[in-house]
Image (cartoon, rainbow, N blue to C red; front, side, top):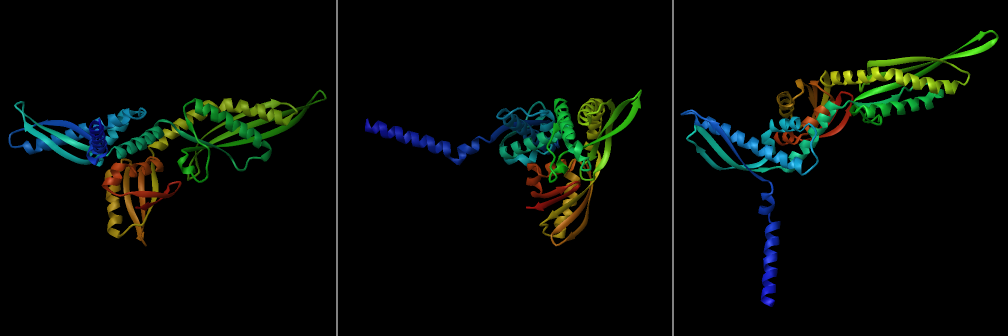
Length: 362
């Protein structure tokens, strides 16, 4: 009995040792895939490279599917996976060819065993999900204009609440305004409320007519430029001014809503693909040669980049003038993707104010 018990313990130890060994852990990241390509006599090596590329793509497709299955479904999966598949080399730790051959059908076949960096893949899936989310749903933050008469502040706050509900019910994303992060808010909607009262008399009876006007200005964050607006005016009789303002403001919200929503969506689509100038500052830049290399990297491998230029380099700080199609936040997301950082360089955000971005080269 003691011998059997000792043997059982030994067997258990061996099982645990195997399960915890680096080889066993590594096996969980291994993917086997096959690729093929038709070849002509004398051009086998070209076909081999094409077959190898297809095998890598197939391996990565399997890894993407596994990553998504183990988590929640990825919105717009095809768009996200296509983005990743354009940068296949960024997600392989190693690629081993386990078989290659020419077939009677005139194809060159390559079978590989690839070790995938799943953590990098999952991280990029999350980042791309955020980018897709930006493209699909306008991001809005409501602010009350600072010059608003304090008497009307409670009503303006109620208007902000009503509009927030309507925006959310329409599928738009609404964020609490923050001065520090206003450049990441998307579009800003400034609320302004004005009231004027006129007195008249009819057959000895004094009548008060109140005119309530609501302005909703859509701003581009950073520049504070008004890019669209929706206004409404309502006239109501009454002596109780606060009650009249409250009722008139609610009627104004209903009156501006359709136009405001259309303008937000239209402006968002325009801004999303609009060309904008971005001032990029990279600190901890080691030398001029590296600073110049960054220009070529940005122009060749950042999808929204139109052109980039090095303006100045001094004291390990490089200033770039970028012409970019999209939001500054999208640019940041792209250069922080795992495939990009693995191939080129890693950065850490120091600050972002409007179209000015400061990052640290790690």
